[in-house]
Image (cartoon, rainbow, N blue to C red; front, side):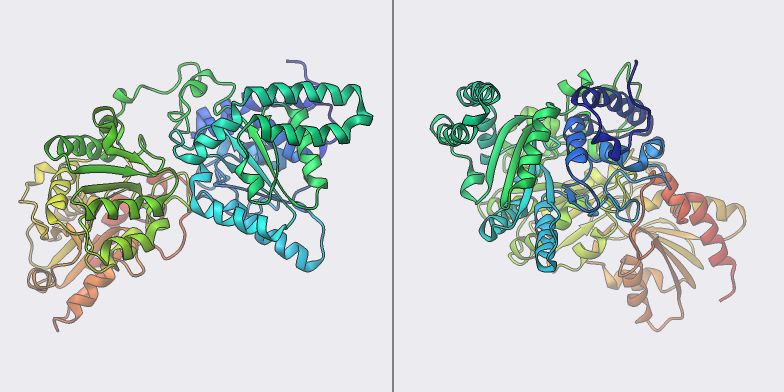
Length: 619
């Protein structure tokens, strides 16, 4: 391809490039995205959809002087490429490489560490208020997707910005998707705006008139605003105090630049509604944007494997078990937050569509909604990633636990979740869920026990969370099984040393036992099973006979399960040495799960070495 510019292109070059050159750059960037993400994995369809939008943004706004805040931030790959990180894309999301999200420590052009949706308008409004108080004049911009508009905090911010009349630009990237298809009234409203053919026809005709008769421009613009409300549903954004521009073609660089430059010159809140195609430029992603939202590495010539070709994961086991339970009990309703496929609910949705509720990116609403279902004798299952359940902490505590309601939380991606990094790891759920009165917290050691725990949780009739990690499920049946009764399980007997495992850390604990046995180091292994409430009586009886106890958990060590166990055993009066192994008390960077476990000593060799040193060392 002959191109009139050299790569990599920096944002400073964009101002001198013609629209034709910018359009060619968009083609080049898409080729680079397909090549790099197919090798590293990452957020694929979302970044393909914002190429032209990002080029226009980088052309019009002068970051870091202008403050551009990206909602969620998973769609900032093009932004990174145009702000000095083009060559680093080959290491994106890899350990010690650049992040897949905005990172202030990574570049001055990244103004806000994001990762969860709905927050950009609030942050941009905060930037704008600080600007006004300091007497500065830079632009403040929030780039938010239509999926993120299902998050309640986005409306809180829109309401606040409109009331204050603070100069602020909101760019709505409308691709009719979050991760799964969007749901709710706002999605329908945007669809009406997006497809109002009478207005779009009038708008295009008026634009041609403005170009041919520039002196009539101001009068025709007034006419356009009047006709807009006559031909299409009134944009709710106007009622909130924003000047509404749109809908515009989010892949038309010229139109995007014009809208952004106009908005930048206005001294008031402005919302630009840009309609884009998620996955644009890669047909598989355009046809299946939810499948290609976030990917591992793949061959771009072939695409991703069919879901039936995937190995058995904890998520798949949860989904199929829930389907079986739903067949047996018509009171079961599954609730998720824009993650129907990601949380394993695809098959249940096919069979019982009316009993699978996608709340959108509205975790707080999802949990309160579950509470209402439970109060009317239903059995709600809230299927949510650990990192996103954090956003509904108060609803879980007050709406569910305070009322002691039979809501089951299927907490997926518990522990370290991999290359999405700090904002997506689930290392805190053991701590915050265990702090809630009336809550039972279960952690299965393998896929079989996950099935058993789901049956057990539904029979409890009280709040219960079953937490399980990302990845392929192991099967520890060869070590024997005992009835799933919520009590601690002894897997291997011993008398001097013991390893107490939480959930899937049993696999590493048992591997350490095998290694230690070869070195004639005696070691019992226990599966805690029920993290909250811990059966303190049995814990004292079973563990007070040991000299040394090593606890293993896939969660933050500070305030974690191991510390609670050590505290309980200290009350026995026996001289027991307890060593806790878990994730350190800090945010864990991105990288593969295997790499991160190795770096922090939580892989099997690391745990084995720690156990050997601990048990051999004289107290």
